[in-house]
Image 1: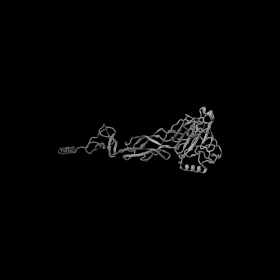
Image 2 (image 1 turned 180 degrees about the horizontal axis):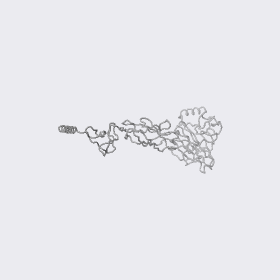
Image 3 (image 1 turned 30 degrees about the vertical axis):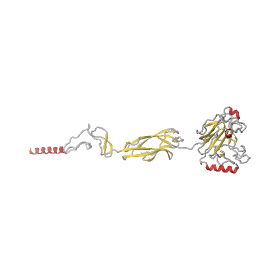
Image 4 (image 1 turned 135 degrees about the vertical axis):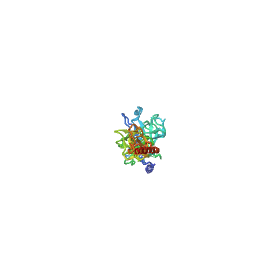
Length: 403
């Protein structure tokens, strides 16, 4: 394919690719000692017989479509080799094993030239190929989900190879390959987390995933419909599980806050105590003292987790049934009573006292008060008794006069 045609194909692939491109880490696990991996050949970006790599150099060979990474030849391979790792999270879609892994001619042909290899498909639609692996070293199967840095197998020399190395290649869904490096003679964007210096190694750090705040409501107390006296204080607790990938902390401005409806007197967020933090997968109980509204009836309000001014996660809807406030029209404190109790007043259930008790009671005399005027719950006098008393008083008065 001529250079112009290659550039047009790559341009079309780039236009078709999602805006958020996956970034890669270095695809070999760096050993703690011994020979370190090194770049033996970049992708050839010249469509003719000339050589040109991404930095306008010639560290490549004619028609090469990937990046070759050496490990130090067969002695290193025979001593245990080096682990090949997934450059980014994805799903394994192709696995090929069983090819001899000591090819030195560059023309052994097994596995369509890739020998033993793994293909991983990523969320952005691109795929990465890991070729020339050691026979029997593969650690994954088709359909496996892999995380960034997970072992795929070991470096070998299978397929069209001249010595132990990894052939790493990036391809689009159209099967068009691309160079992960950017430079003066390469593409405008690098696919590496950090590609490093020319002939150096890219970073072995995985791309940091986008932060996701999420929260699942586990429990809410009090239960819906719980009765609370008007204006009274009550305690509520909200249990949330951190189902995102961030860590909740006071320093990160995470708290539980009122979201909508009745606030029950909540004036601000309920934060984490001290230096507490809640990692992904952990749960946290938020406890707060609230106040019931003063008007009787059903009241509800919702609360959610918040990060700064941004609400996230499940909504916790608090619902209570507010009972009437204490009323002066109900049974009050008398000179004697049976103790505090619940009585029906004009405004609902109110605390009161009265009725029979051990307190003093006034004698009813003509022209005098009945004593305590707070006996609202006492029995009324029968009308006949009043007339009999009046007749007796009149008879006594007549006798005095006749005397």
